[in-house]
Length: 269
Image (cartoon, rainbow, N blue to C red; front, side, top):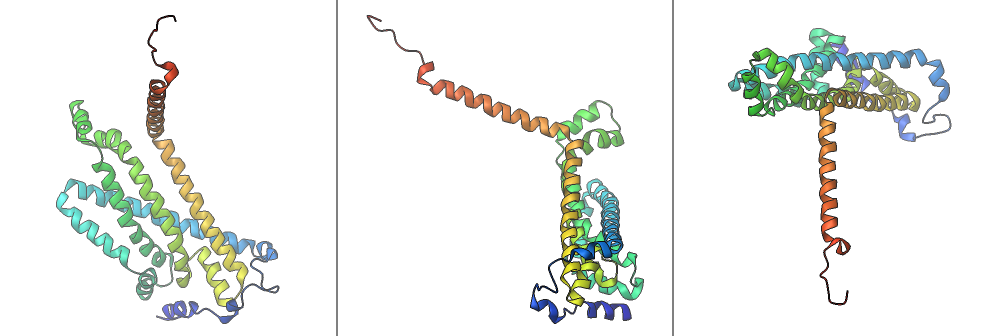
């Protein structure tokens, strides 16, 4: 319980921050970047490790849960209901409940982070596979594909955009939640933010917040580019639709152009 008491004490914000930015306490002190570079890099690496670890474990569990839900339809309600309940638990309370049992450890940080990804990933995976048209499934069966081959070569590519969208949302959400884990000592960049709050020092707070935002943007962009690489046909479909609209517009313009319309022949022409 002592770790939980220290975590609660760490949330007390001192009064010095109420004074705002001053000459002695600027929004960022550049010398801090060089003097504390090792600490900043360590915090960033820990933040990435917690984020990637939580999303990876969450994706593996979600694939299993989604597979069960798709195979046995009656289990879908209990699965989504349970993951929804886990998602609604306040993050600070979730970390606090685990501290007496698992201590201030990476396990305590990972368990809530993984649980918070499940609802997002399970629903997106299920929606992706349900989006596969029935004629496509029947055609795959008619070609003699086994259930495993059909899932991997036909259904999974169609479901990939949905899964990627789920990963993007889950990853950005996890980046933000990792900062909260600073109250148990495993918050990555959140530890810099918490240190700035406790000491009334703007620089670590600014660096931690800025790097957290940048990390979320970079990871989201990485998944966006991964989605484009894995689904090149989606770009060709959009391009084809744009071309069709353009041709239709040209035809409409030609049809309404008086110069292009046939003129009656008059006497004396």
